[in-house]
Image 1 (cartoon, one colour):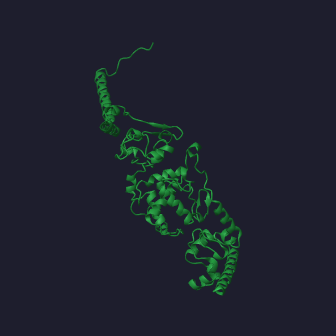
Image 2 (image 1 turned 90 degrees about the horizontal axis):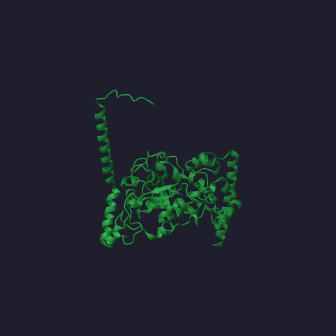
Image 3 (image 1 turned 30 degrees about the horizontal axis):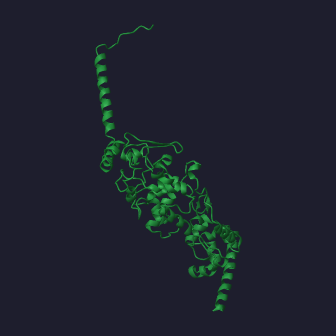
Length: 405
């Protein structure tokens, strides 16, 4: 048996134990005081009072107390949002201020809280129980609450709560139209109308002249160059400014200025930021398209242009910006002049033959032919021949039109 030894400091043992005891008592008192100061206690008490005023003391007695948590194992989410937002499933508080407002019924029919949680749609920091932390308004948390307040800070045009649609589109990205997501639907229409896929790969389908945008939404905010961006320096603000004027942010960009207004630019910014992987089980995507499949009409049109007399212009990428109407080739972007009469057009605009211009291009074409569509001297000779053949067809069609008159 080990022999007990006396303390080397017998005179200070008791004072030290007394001090430690006092510190423990003070720590416990501070812990209880800080716990009582949590925001959720105030909101729960206020909601209980509102229920008592509206429905009576008996209903108020049934209001849950303490921290409430929704654990969604499939999504790995522990959301405590209903600790403060207790009116989520209550009827009668549809017009109340947050956090005492009833959640709209329609979204919950297909997205029940028990299955989806809260933050998967709304964003925020699910396990926090104080306002700033729960809303993600803290350093290094990159999923803020996509609320109307944030929409106002971003000066959204129209619906201030539209930012929420970004999270909707993470799962519904292959929908041609998603109910209730007006901003995202607008952006998807613009992508088709402006022919963005002519230059960019989107959802693993499209061109390679511009960067692949399939997963651009997972790009970290720190990776953006904000040196030319005035005002808010966020990924959202960067994309809005870029869609309005690409060259203002990236001086060597060949992306054209489509003249998007603020509403359109903001909608497109929301769309591209939603393009990130959806880490959800397949069962959560039941009924939603799993791929971005072109329509039968689109496939037929693409096949016609790839195999018709204008196939060379399609294969080389010229049709990305230019239509060749005499061959029925329509550019999805339509930002450059029709190449049907390029032989004549180049001569009148630049005072140079098409041969000379292609050998030493200027302006936008100098950038395109040096970075994006790089042709060998032999290929340039073929291009000149193809353009002269197209011009011959153009002249013939014009002559026939003259005869008809």
